[in-house]
Amino acid sequence: MHGNTDSEASYVSSPPRRQAYYVQSPSHESTPAHSPAGSPPHSASLGRHSRESSTSRYSGSIKPGGSGKINPNQAERGEMWREEGIIKEEEAGLLEEEVDEMEERKGLPRRCYVLGFMLAFLVLFFFFALILWGASHNKHPIISMDSITFHNFVIQAGTDASLVPTELSTLNSTVKLSYRNTGTFFGVHVSSTPLVVYYSQVVLATGNINKFYQSRKSQRSLTVLVGGNAVPLYGGGSSLSSTPGKAGYNVPIPLTLNFTIRSRAYVLGKLVKPKFYSIVQCSLNLDQTKLGTKVSLKNSCRYGN
Image (tube, rainbow, N blue to C red):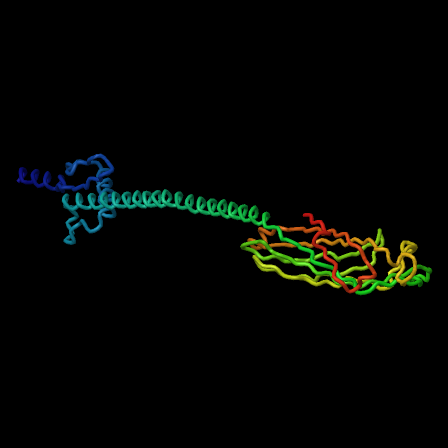
């Protein structure tokens, strides 16, 4: 009975041994899968921590039956899946970066092509405009004076607007001329300064040319009325007389006709618009015995630009 009591006492005093299982974490050093019964309490807590971390990291790898054991093959597959996911993400990121780089490389030449095309277009445009400008300046219009007809000429005594006594002159005439546009690919807008008839430095008569447009390679004839009514001479016409039989009646009166014609062409819109100036100066004589007769001006005028 004493022997049985000792064995029973030893059986009661020695606790039963339980086998502990631990899961190895891939990021930590390997932990023994088996620990003897005399392991310290912190080993058990480490095992619990390892099981919790493995459970959260590899969800679904623990059998639902619940012995707490993890299949090593399932843990390896979970690790492989995780690594494959990371590799795929890295490959996708690299692929996106390569695509962006390719787009940037493609975009730069395209912008260069656009800038080069615009620059070439501007150069050609201005070169073409320069050619048109040079060609248009050689196409100066031609003015031809035809004739002048004096209809009447009267000298009489009178007063000016301030009632100063002086000789007054009245002259009416008609001037004919022609205008020709020599431009082959542009029309011109034409205007003129007044036509002025001078005796010495005294203005006897004036006339105006209305503005007009002349198409390319064409011409027209112009008739301008030039006259002056009761123009004060202030002693400048003391030698003039319009009465037959008086001194100076049969003497031709030297006169001068001056005016300037302005022509403007719009070759390329308002970018190329050359201007032309035609200055006309004519010297002629007024013969009172031939009033109403045409006086030719073809050899009596000078033309300038």
